[in-house]
Amino acid sequence: MHMNNGSSELAKLIFKNSADEKKLKQLLISNYSEADLASYLHSKEPLLGRAAGFALRLIGSSNAIPALVDALKDKDRGTRFNAEYALWEIWSHSGDDAVDAMLADGKNLLKNESYQQAVECFTTVIETDPKFAEGYNQRAIAYFMLEEWSQAIRDCKRTISLNPNHFGAFAGMGHVYVRLGKIDEALEAYKQALVINPNLISIAEAVLRLRDQMQSE
Image (cartoon, rainbow, N blue to C red):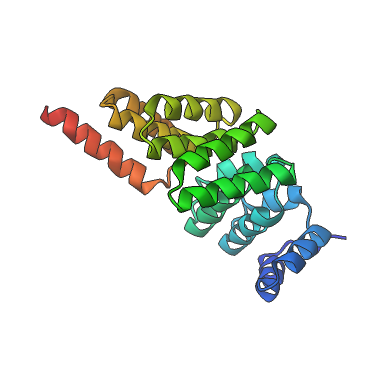
């Protein structure tokens, strides 16, 4: 039995249980289907769209990705933000707890600036699950930090081939092309990122800077 789909019910459930994420997940699963939450993203009530995005971050699967990608263009800023957050969370789950744990270890290595070790960790992720797009995306970040440009580009392209909605990989590829002085390629990659996710302010600013640079040359 699903609860009333009004914004007040879903928002109340989230607010009252936000301190206990495990309990909140259980309540969401018990009271709302993923399909219902995905449909709420398009609600005219901003609070309901925001709550649905927050809920999908916790319990969403790849099935919710199309609705979340659409929500990146929603009129409400909060809904757009929660949709983006939910996408990153879903993309970080392979369906295998061991692989996900390795991915988390690699991200921690990135934070600690242990870039070569991160490459090795993400390589293990990829070897374990070659179809897990986020393994390639995270390794691309590590390669970028090591200034290994060709490897970074290769992994960005592999990420996109597995996950065409991965605006992060398009943006990352644009960053690499900038470092290589390939401005046309950088602009195209940045544009692709913005087509998917218009909320990437830093990428939009980078496009403007590159265009100004090209006009001044």
